[in-house]
Length: 325
Image (cartoon, rainbow, N blue to C red; front, side):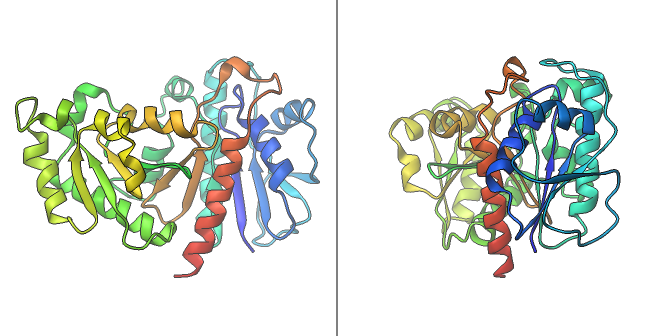
């Protein structure tokens, strides 16, 4: 039986709301569903988004197989709700929700972690050293280059660097790191998404992809040699603006960009409400919506759950595909 572990994300944002809305649509008794959320926060959100599923509160989960006829609300330590803003309390709750969920999901082969959005500001208020889910999960599972990949039916996009300032990106790129990322992208497409012989486009770092070294030499020294070495599946480096402007992404199964906004801007223009963030190259499955905490609409009952529903559906698909191996 599959097990799905949802976190609440930052409780002052829309995380708890979109999880409840998602469970209202996807809950079924053929799988087990867990939601790591303080009781007071769950009840506050369920006062304006009525749960359509049966649920029961648990302080601890000690059994491997609990009845599947209800959602297990794991009541982690809560605190005051400050609607619509990041606080030290909300940062601690979101981190505790994630930590507790990881502890359980790692015990099962047929489990997936689905995370609601966190606030990096709230984490910093707690002196949590991680920039977000991806690098924390990489540290937990001792994966030096966890891969941030964005999935939708219109575009699959991966990142060579994640939440680093633009000025740091060139020094973070190396043949060793990119080679590892190439392998991760390929393995994820083949094993988790069942795409045989994938075609993967690689974007250049610099304007005009460096224009033969005139505008930067990372393409010449790092990117192009790796593309040539892996030319059966990887192509490029492409000039990013022309690549998306001419819709060339439609000719490839996935796109690998060198930094965050290079691929996130076109991805969100194409799939904002249906995109999923997948942390690839991990022993466990982790998906999440591709949007943030949306503090501006928190506790108004108007948050769109479609990206969270898509995150569940992708996790379910990967569980099925990994079971075929």
